[in-house]
Length: 96
Image (cartoon, rainbow, N blue to C red; front, side, top):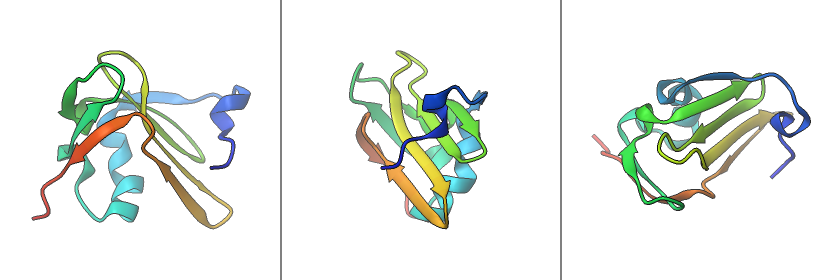
């Protein structure tokens, strides 16, 4: 995965998990806001709409609202999309 601009102190906007719906929905083809993610670090299970999202021009970082660890990272750069689920133990989403 490419280095994200967030790692070089680019200003980001911090919002709720609903902000991740657009970019993640493009890749996953589901309503990511209602998906239940379980944090690999603290074990909290919650809808991703309840997570904290840091976003900038290149992507979003979804953080666990309970412990602050990164659940997933999405980057769109140079015509490619990158998605990493490093901090998610599981992700459950309805398909219809």
